[in-house]
Length: 473
Image 1 (cartoon, rainbow, N blue to C red):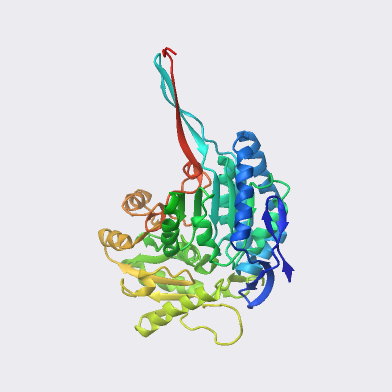
Image 2: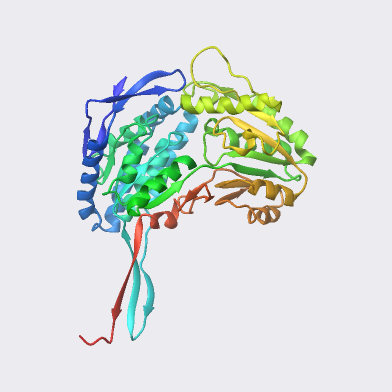
């Protein structure tokens, strides 16, 4: 077992108080991290505030070079990092590799983003332009499902925009992020990136801290509402990427054999612990029986187990709290007599937070397993008759993060996509996010955007400078 330290003001430090981190595959302690509170947060914020004075003045080229150094550090150490990620998060090695290399790629890509001045007026009377200026010290709060990707998703645009950041990883998955902190300690100027760990009570202290200017958070809608409330005291800027109950719509012309595997992984990647996973799959009645059977058959070929073991396709739920919630939803479905195509029963023996691949056969629309975000390896399949009907059912949710349409007729797919009340819609694919395209939710799935120029702007204020050309002074 290794003790991991925090990054504050360019140094790896601890406070002598520790939190245990468990491997969800076997419930064994695999590392310890500092249990920080207000004192450590104050030191990190003070370091970020000092560093901001110089960092905000650096050129775009300097910032890009630093971010490219972060990308290189992650990529060069990817083998070590992905194995550590599996150990603390549970996802299979192949999916952990995707996250680590994806984080490096995201950093490299976003280092190329720029926020150019916009000329509003240029004539004989005046020159007016809008420039973007960094908002200041950012507080970043990261979840446990994609801890490395989400950390980079917050650190990189903050730095590119000229901000400094204090980042809090989830107490369930802080190890890989702190190892990355060690690797980039001498890459980033002291104080520009600070990473501290602590229990959930540290989050509200970050949100309300008077010297933090912006909060960027990924997590549940319920917590997002609390953050929005906490940040309102001094009108902090906020970006919230929250929950989703994403609908996939499969039209009758879809190729059953080809789409079955893709639909399976759109729901079960990372054991279903993905905000943009397909959590409601609507299948046209003409192909419902064939496609539901094909998905259930494919599920039998996928191994649920320890993510570090070769051949594992679906790992454990990351933590006990979420594990219990998923089991509760499954039990509710059993209590209500809903039909299961696969799963429904957990193995009572052994350790680890394993939930069997669970697929339900056309439960009612108001079932908890349909109406709530499962965030686990559970897929309700739902039958529909008409396009108008399925659009109404898909939109009947407090969430609006993402969705997908599966059809050979891409024009029809786009027509349906334009009627869905979500921030992102895919046609014939799933979970594709571009570093250059904005990503954010509608309704209660979020506030603001990440990725692309739109996401970068979230870390800035617009400032308009106007010069009167014929002024007499």
